[in-house]
Length: 430
Ligand code: CAP
Ligand code: MG
Image (tube, rainbow, N blue to C red; front, top):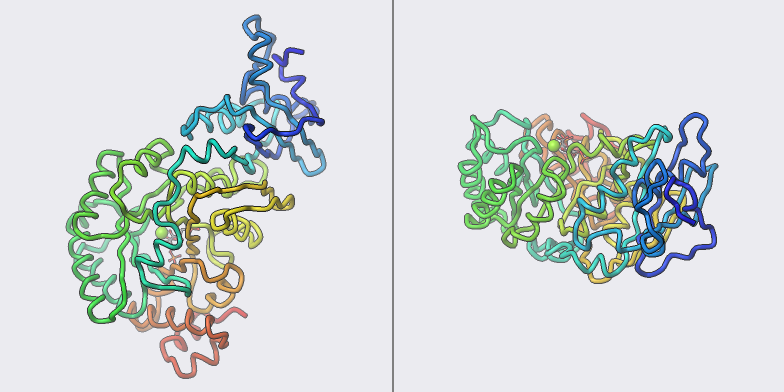
């Protein structure tokens, strides 16, 4: 039967084929609309349907492109739809999102809709580059084999001059940070121009490397309109930076895909500023899991995923599920956390970045929950140390050391004074 008016998409006996995209949504029907009808609206409006019967919909289109809703669970609001792969242009993220994350979010008959997860067919995954460096490449560059990497964000977010910025970065490196990054809203400002900041900070990075004998890296924020962004990344590379940082949500998917293609070989750090506008509600929007998968497909090397115990929203199980999704080769389904199975084939894993409201006292708990393959970032938790950035960075590094050795922070702090002051100020979580 022709499914032109949002009906007849339900087929519980359908088994997804290897060319299908399997998509999980949470659906909340509007007043007077049945769960099944709302599900049909999602499947139809995201593919070949519209609000009325149309004479132009022929049997061929139905046979080859009709999606099937093969799972419905009214109690948990869950539906799973298998979309024939030909509905999506290989390698085109914006087109795919215009379908499954497009009109469907605004339909009157649906009061809430959340895109929870997408299981991509193998041929689609192969169209993308994935991370160029991934966890292995980043560890190699920084010469840190097993422990979590430690980073800071220069604070205040805005206001420091290029010289002041570089000075703060220097202290953080000397104290024990591996990486220093710009904040998400620092680009090229009247008071702190990109080029000058880059030169000054890289110069002090080199000095910090000489003094400490460790590898130190800087993540300059290149976020800008596309051409400018690419230009900044090229400048960064030519001046010896190993990294570029991008605000993935605000620059947009098209720019991000092109950036991955055209960017010189830099490690790409993905900051997710703005994601919560659509990931935060459990009733409506797009999950962080989906965002993370798109980043891995496109090829970011490290991504902010949440800190569990930090200042930003993000339940422990959800953050852990995202961590597994971006780091594992084969991901097992987990119904409770809306995780579909995924085989990432040869796509490199991405580093999970835990950040936002962290301080040394939170490190052991974080490492226990997320494992060693994380990048721990502290802004306020380093620059807010009573004795300043250098001491704050030492305290943070001691906290990493103590948690690796399994020594309680309070005990370790007895012989590590900077850590002692940090936990006196902020406390230590068990
Ligand atoms: C952290 C941070 C990051 C957040 C973003 C900030 O600073 O620089 O942008 O981590 O959140 O400006 O808040 P603090 P998320 O360490 O001083 O909190 O990582 O969850 O995307
Ligand atoms: Mg920030």
